[in-house]
Every structure is written in C-alpha cells, then in structure tokens.
Image 1 (cartoon, rainbow, N blue to C red):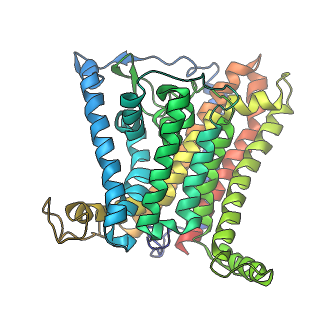
Image 2: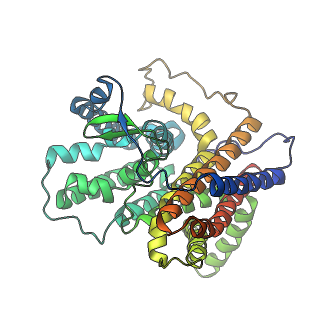
Image 3: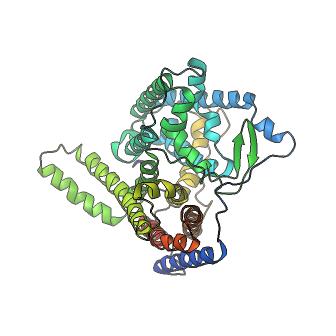
Length: 448
C-alpha cells in the first residue's frame, strides 16, 4: 500500500496460542475438509446452480433501468470528484480525498461489497455510463477472441504497480492524471469494441469486481435481481484467454503487499537498492525498480503454486492437457484472492477507511463541513488487535475450504469417475495448504 497509509494493524498483543499452531490447525482443517468432500460429495452440484428472483416485485425494482441510470450518475459524479480533488485539493495524500477514495473505498471496499451484494460496480461504473451515452451499443469492430481478459489482467497489474511501486499515490495530482489517462484508454476501448464487450473482458475494474461478485448469492438476469447458492457464479466463469493470468495477478500482487510489510523483504530490498545503485541507477529510481521486482516475484510465486497443482492433477491421467486443466480450475482460486484481500486489508479498510468521513465533508481543504463530519476522527478501538488476527485467520481458512469445494466439484465434472477426480485433487490440496501457509506467514510478517 502507498507508504503514507498505514497497512492497518502492525502490532499485536501476545496471542494465547502460538502463531505456528494456527498454521497446523489450518492445514488440518483443509485435510479434514478434503476427506469429507471425497466421502460426502460424490457428484457435481455447482456446475448448474439454481436461481430464483427476489420475492414480489423487488427483483424487478432493483434491476430497473432507472436504478442503473441513477447508479451511473453517482459513478460519474464520484469520478469527477476524484479528478477535481486530485488536482485542486490539498497536496498531501492524507489530507486529499482522491488517494483515500481510490485506494481504500474503491479498491478495497468494493471487494467486500461485491461479495456481499453482487456486481454493484456494474451499476455505478462511470466509464460504462459515459460510454453508453457517447457510443450507445455501436462497435467499430468485434472484440478479438485472442484478447480475452488480457487487457484486464494488464490493467490490474498496472493499477497495483501505481499503488505499491510507483509512489504516485503520494502525489494526488499525479494520481488524478493516472485516473484521467485510464479513463481515456477505457473510453477508447469502448469506442472501438463496444461498451459491453469491453466492460465484460477489457475494463480492468469491471472484470476484477465481477470475479468477486460471482461468489455472492445475488445475481441479475434480464434486469431481475435474484438469488443463487453462495459461490454459484464461479463455475459459470468463461475461462477465456487471460483469465488465468488475471487471477494469478490478483493473488500475487497482494502477496507482495503482505511480503513488503515484513523484515525479510526489507532486508532484501536494501540489498537490491545497493546493487542497483552500484550499477549507476539513480537513487530516486531504485526504490521503484525494487518494488517492481517484488511485485513480479509475488505474481511468480502465485503462478508457480498454481502451475505445480495443475501438473500434479495432469499426472493422474484422464487425458486432459495442462492448458485445459489450467482454465477449468482457475475459478477455484477466486476465493483465495478474496481472502488474501480480506486478510491483508481488513483493518486498513476499517480504520484508515474512516478518514473518508471527514475528507468528504471538506474535499478541497477549504474549511468546509458539508456533512457535519469534518471534525470526526479515526476510532482505533473499533476492533482489537487480537480480534483482527482471529478474523483474518478465520477468513483465510474458510476461503481455502471454499476453493477446495469448487475444485472438487469441477473435478467430478471433468473426470470420468469419482476416484480419479479425488486423486486429481491430492495435488490441489497440497497447493491449498501452501497458499494457506503463505497467507498466514505473510500475516505474521506484517504483525511482527
């Protein structure tokens, strides 16, 4: 996270249970869950989930076009506010509305909202709203199949580079320029390929939040909001080109953010900075290069874990090639992506997120009090340090159990017999344990 913002809780009181015991307990929970799935889940149940509209007219009201128009207006207004405050607001990031809104409320807060309420960002997406007014449903050419979700993967990686490596978040005007540039690129994509095709595959934030929304029990079909089983939207994910890369980037970038909070990375960063300086790299550039290297290392770690699990699944037979397996199981990593976000950013959202109350009341730093909250302060007693740790560990374990469920269900649909399906998941179990151990280790690093 940008250096001017605390990462949430950085110290914990002494825990009544040693941290290593949490890791062992988490591994045991995953192993027991695996055995229970093998014994009690003999056929796929999530490949074609049920859906029913909300009772009465509620589903149609929530899916009505008028609400979509209102959401678009709100989204465009917030985009404009970010641009105005970024350029005209206070120059320090902690006193400026734009960095807090972009990095906390938007980037982190909307993840939680998406899991709870569904694809809310589609409703308030400012670029989609502008595109629908400017271009309507016209497209100059069809969206290329080979592009798939690659533009979205590149966009998410680029945003996290801005957040974690560039230092632009410390300069509100520079951040506003980045938002403006992204807006122009997005509208250009919509002009060429059409608003909905680009929003569905190319627009980074639409794709990103939609993946998390697929975990929600709420789904909109033909302008009617209804309910489905939890996780029910993930098996229906179309694994087009770039989908694997996108999910790996989602996990890997948070991995680096957690790693960067610990002493191990700090020591390594010093060595890398010295090495780059000795090569003649300017001293103001080396921290950005080092953070960029770390970001790519985090993505490589996440990708390596997944590749190992896929190779193991392929080794059991079934005449399924690695590429087919990679695309077939990638949806099962989305719960891991969400728990990595929850584990690392929960306290960040709960505490630093409160600052949006007084920043919104005085967005330009002119002494205003528009909402009567300009004098509010951050309440750090909202959640104790140990309670935060327990919540984070609990989310990590539950998320990896959810990933096991999705992978097991998909294996039953792919393989010709249940025994082979279970055998294919031995490696995936090992990978889930690995991801869990990594998440808990990163939490321990951040809290050391």
